Length: 276
Ligand SMILES: NC(=O)c1ccc[n+]([C@@H]2O[C@H](COP(=O)([O-])OP(=O)(O)OC[C@H]3O[C@@H](n4cnc5c(N)ncnc54)[C@H](O)[C@@H]3O)[C@@H](O)[C@H]2O)c1
Image (cartoon, rainbow, N blue to C red; front, side, top):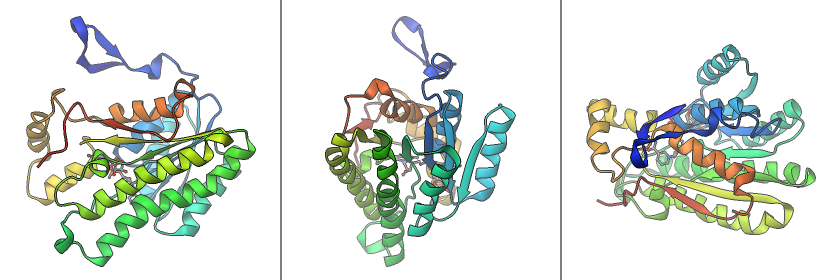
C-alpha cells in the first residue's frame, strides 16, 4: 500500500502490511477498542500479518462489523464485547483469548475515552470513568496477561497513552491525568517484567482522525471534515495522524524489530508540540 504522504525526492513511503505478511504469524494478539478508529486499523494490520486476533470493545455491533469485514478478507477473529470498567470483564477478555488461541503473545491496550473539562467542569462520574477505562482496565488486562506471557517465555504489551498524558493539554484534566498514569504504568511494568522477556511500551499520539475527535467536533456543532482540515494546518508534517500512522508504530513496538525497546513511551506527533 502506498501512503498519502510523499517522502524525500517524492518517492512513495511504503507501509509494511503488504511487505511482511508473516510478521506476526500465529501470534495470539488481544486488541482492546478493536471496533474503534485505531482499533480497526490494528485489527486489519495484525490479521494481514498472520496473527490470531481477539478483540474487546463496548460495541458488540462494532465488533461484529469488523469481524465480518475480516471474514470477507479470509481472516477469522474472535471477540468478547463488554465494558472495560468491570474488572471481571477485563479478566474474561484474557481468559477467552487464551481459550481461543492457546495463550496471549501480544496485548494492545488501545481502548480509551476522552471526557472534556477542567477540574471545575469534571464531575466525579467523568473522573472515575476516565480512570477506570483509560488506566485501571489497562492494569487489569496487563496483570491477567503477564502470567500467560511469562509461562510462554515472553511477550509484548503496547499501551496507548497520549502526548496529552506526557504534556498536559488544555481543559481535559481527567483524560490527561489518566493518560499520564498509563505512561507511568508502562515504565513500571516495562522495568519489572523485562526479566520475564515481556516488553511493555506505550505509544503517545497527538491528534488522530478517528471517531474520538470527529464526534467531539460534531458535539460542538462543527463540520468534522472542515475542523480536521483546520487542525491539519497546525501540524508541521502537514496533517493530523490517520489511524494507520499510529497502528504502524504500535505494530513496530509489538514486533521483533523492537526487541531491545522496553519501558518506553514513544511520542507520535508529526512534530506538533502540545500547546494552548
Ligand atoms: N483520536 C485521537 O486524537 C487520540 C489522540 C491520542 C490518543 N488517543 C488514544 O488512542 C486510543 C484509540 O482511540 P481512537 O481515536 O481510535 O478512539 P475511538 O473512539 O475511535 O475508539 C475507542 C474504542 O474504545 C472503545 N471503548 C470505549 N470505552 C470502552 C469501555 N468502557 N469498554 C470497552 N471498550 C470501550 C469504544 O467503543 C471504541 O471502539 C485511545 O486510547 C485514545 O485515548 C486518541
